Amino acid sequence: MLLHFVGMKTLYLQHHKLTLRFDPALSCVGHDEVLLKIRLAGICGTDLALFNGYANFNGVPGHEFVAEVVETGSEVDANLKGRRVVAEINQWCGECDQCARKHYSHCLNRRVIGIRDHQGCFAEYLMVKANTLHIISDSIDDRQAVFIEPLAAALRIVEQLQSHDYRDIMLIGAGRLGQLIARVMILQEKPLTVVVRHAQQRQLLQRLPLDCIDESAVEVNMVDVAIDATGQPSGLALALHALRPQGVCVMKSSYPAPITVDLTRLMIDEIELIGSRCGPFSSAIEMLENGLKVLIKPLEF
Image (cartoon, rainbow, N blue to C red):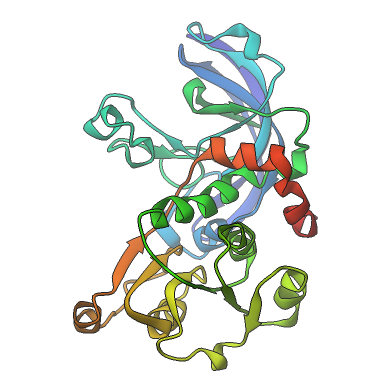
C-alpha cells in the first residue's frame, strides 16, 4: 500500500447543499488502485437528481470525467503513469457471483463513483480500481472523452434491443442524455421520432435524420420501441402510451420517487419493460475514434 499526500479542492454535497472544500488528506493507494488527477468533468442529470435528494447521497458527486494517472498501486503497471484515461463508474469486487459471470456493472458489492459509497470526480483527485480504466488515445480530446460514460449508457440500449424485431423508435426526452441517445439510435437505420419540450432541444436535433414532435402529438399505437429519458413519471407514461401491442419500453431514467404503472395493460398488450443503465465503454471509445465525434460536436461546451 502506497501512501500519497494529496490536498485537494472538492465540491461536497451534504443535505442537498453543495459547498467548495479544501480537504488535506493522506491517501493510501491500494495495491490494485490508481490515483487520478481529474482533467475535465461533466455534469449529468443524475448529479442534479442527487442535489435534490436522490439516493440520499452525501459526499463528492460526479462520475463523467477524463483524468491522468499520477500514481499506481504495487500490483499495477507503472507505465500507466501519465496516461490519459476514463474509468467505469461501477467499481466491482471481482469476487461475487455477478463478477464471476462478468456482469460487472451489476456486482453485488459494487461501489458507484459519485453515486454510492465512492467519492466522485468533482474534485482534483480520485482513487479507482486499475482494472476499471480505459486508456484514451490522442485522437479523442478531453471534451469528447467526457462524453464516453453517457455515450456508453446510450449504447446499452442498442445492446438490449439486438434480439428484438422492431420497425420504429420514439425517444421521449431530448436533454443531455437524450441528445446522445438520439445520435446513437439514428445509426440503427430505423425511423426515429424524438419528443422535445423546447426550441433549444429541437435546434440541436434539426440536422439529423429524424422527426421532432411535441408531447401533444404523441398518439396511441405509434411505435414498436419507446425510450424514456426524461427522468419523470410523465415521460414513462407517455412512452407506454405510444407503444403498439408487443412493443418495448426502455426506461433510461431514474425516477425521484415510486411511480404507478398500469401493469394490467402491459400484460394484455404483452408490453416488455426494460430497465437500462450503464453500457460498454470500449464500444463508446471505438465510436468516437471512428467518427461519431462529428455527431457530438454540437453538444460540446
